[in-house]
Amino acid sequence: MVQLIRSPINKAGKATLLACFIFMLLPFATAAAGLDTYPGAEVVKSKSDPKVTTRRIFLGSLKKINNVLEPESVEFVSGSRRSTTYYIPSERRVGKVVEFYKHQLGKLARILFECSGRDCGSSNYWANTVFQTPFLYGPEQYQSYLVGITIDTGDYISIYIGQRGTRKIYVHIETTITSNASPIVDEVTISSALLSRGRYVILLAEGSSDFDSTVETVARSMHKNQQIRLTLVAHDNLQPGETVKQGQQRTLRLSESVRSALVSAGIAEDRLSAYGVGPLAPLESKESPRLELLVIP
Image (cartoon, rainbow, N blue to C red):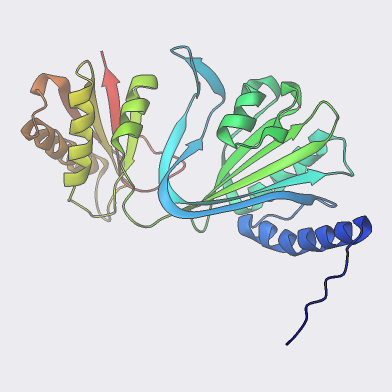
């Protein structure tokens, strides 16, 4: 029989083990987002959620909309997510940290939105509701937020930097790995977006004409919210050899087909209108064809 011998580990030994663990985590966390790590940064939290589901990408500052704190602009994408939070013990100049990560993000991605200080809105909301990491909370004048979409893969990288009242600086990096599968369209998410922001964007699979599940979900949302009237606006890039007018006509046919399907699903005709704008209203963050649902009076 083999006897296991347990030797006590003193505080110094525990500290050494913790340092080794953080050292092992650091390359993984850095590689996860593809960003260089700020010199001397220590990983304090790392999380991975491999489930492919609907994710919110915040593309605007936090504002009160109908007395509810919401981002001015948000995009819903389908994908998995991983995040890493760093503490930077050797730095007290938050502006220097922001410039470092902005430079790193600019090398990998097209920056879609950035804010700093009080323009970002409630630090408490960012820390506790958006990122669910309470120690990011600090004076609002010392916070910054950046988000970009990677040029090669179309993934999203969000960076939140906050300095606490104790002058400790934390950096939270969240990567949303987008899925090539058709985006998940959720009835609750659609209803919430239409009621609070008056807009929802559905990304469409390239070349697809099967919208049954999308139509059913939108119809359920409209049945539950009888006051909503929608304008359906279809967008897409020009196809090879296609003129702008032809692109508009093609996307108009697409939105009209969705409108007809919604009418067949029991939605009154006077609650729906359809338009196609082809390539005339590009969305910086996505090249995919898309259908925008806009609430009209």
